[in-house]
Amino acid sequence: MAPRAPKKPKSRNYRKEYDNYHASPEQIKRRNARNAARKKLEREGKVRKGDGKDVAHKNGNPRDNTRSNLTVQTKSRNRSYARTRNAGKRNPRA
Image 1 (tube, rainbow, N blue to C red):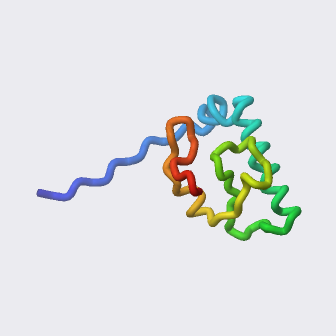
Image 2 (image 1 turned 30 degrees about the horizontal axis):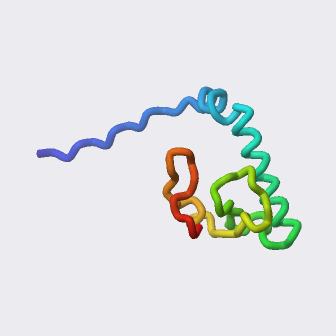
């Protein structure tokens, strides 16, 4: 039996994705809050532009920018947590 050729991935409609998700008022507020959290830690000297680190929200809520809820993690660690249906982190020690 001959090996199968890999399937060609479907092309994404980025315009539709943006209109339906990224441009929604709620997502804009979340993005602004994540950017504000990073700025806050940049001012404190905890992170720098291009350092490969993420500012992580311990409770998974991007709008909660209290200092006790923010931590610095590598990108791979911060983006590896499994999420619950409502996007909260499953690991409570994150």
